[in-house]
Image 1 (cartoon, rainbow, N blue to C red):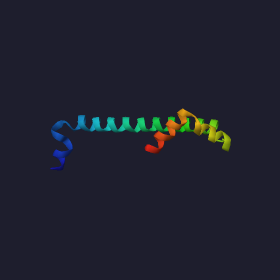
Image 2: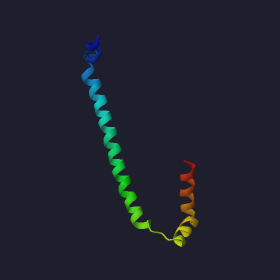
Image 3: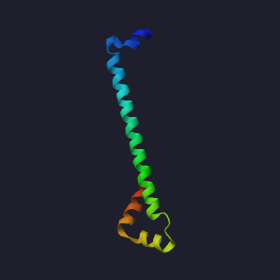
Image 4: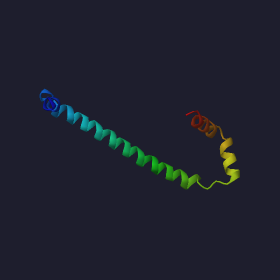
Amino acid sequence: MINDLLFMNGYAVYVLSAFGFTLLSFLSLYLVTKVQFIKEQNKFVAKFGSLNTEQANSAKSQRINKEILADATNN
């Protein structure tokens, strides 16, 4: 019974390799995305990480920043 399930009438190699390839693709996509996000986050912190109160208020008043902040609070 368990052998029939594992061999899948001869199609186990194809099915399991497809699942493995998909899992590997998703894992690599996740890792690449995470690394890129961390790089962009570090760039942002390096550029804007030490804003004083006046600079922060100025940034909040700009139109594009208002749109970004509004979208971030909606999610």
